[in-house]
Amino acid sequence: MPNFKNGRLSEDIKREISGLIREEIKDPRVMGKLISVVRTELSGDNSHCKVYISCIEGEEAARDAVKGLESASGMIRKRISNVMHLKKCPELKFIADDSIEHSAEISEMLKKIGADNAEKET
Image (cartoon, rainbow, N blue to C red; front, side, top):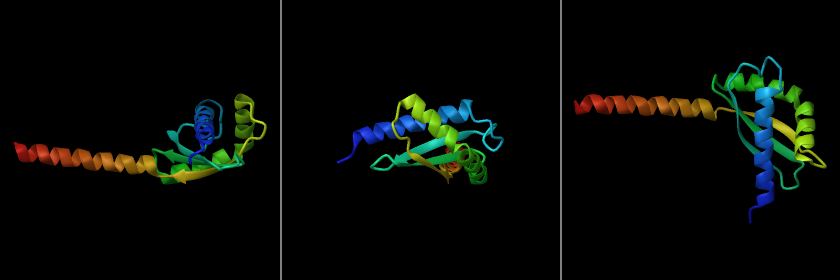
């Protein structure tokens, strides 16, 4: 049976981290890039949270962003704890993900297939 409180907390953490990336973090490895928090996975005891980061510029840019986020993880945990009023904020582990890049490739393939079908119909 899924733990709904855990799922809600995971989504709240995801939303807070996204806001911090957008507004607070000044690390050059993070700033100026189109970074997205794809998903968060919170452990059953809420002590660890995996944060999957994707970047439209590719997986290498996502890896650089992960390094920047890891260096700012203390500040991120403190802000999350203060905003969400948590007694104990989970340990954050940032993981590079290529899902945005992959979905962009799929989108381009679908556009190409659509263009090919349009040419065949005329």
